[in-house]
Image (cartoon, rainbow, N blue to C red; front, top):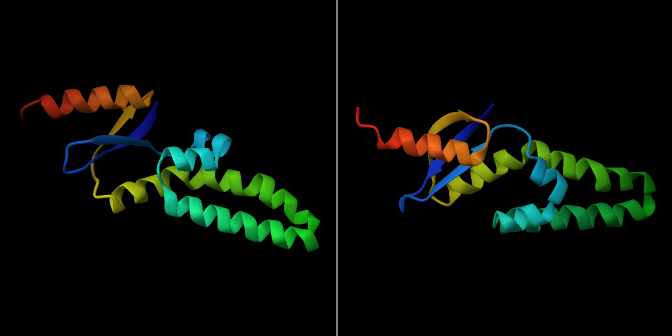
Amino acid sequence: MSKFKIFKNKGNYVETVKDGFSWPALLFGIFWILYKKMYIVLLLSLILGLFLVVISIDYPELDIVTNFAIPVLLGVFGNRIFEDHLIRKGYSIVGEIEATSKSEALIAYGNMSNKKF
């Protein structure tokens, strides 16, 4: 089971973010960033990538960094970057849930939020 953070905005829209490594960010990179609508992160990634490509002309060993390190870093920090993005968009953390999937976490949150204490 994984831990999921539940975020909610003022319009009661709910997002979940898994703690830990993001396989979609590692495998899909820029497409994942576009899907999550993190345009500032996209711009910074493109600038960093362009910078590394220009530098790798003189230092070909930096191709490894460009091809492997950047996607791995995105996988490691992708979920944390997405959490920061949600907070900047006005979301707040309303809970953390242990679940096996995102959909299960949403169901568990829905069951918890309907209970009266």
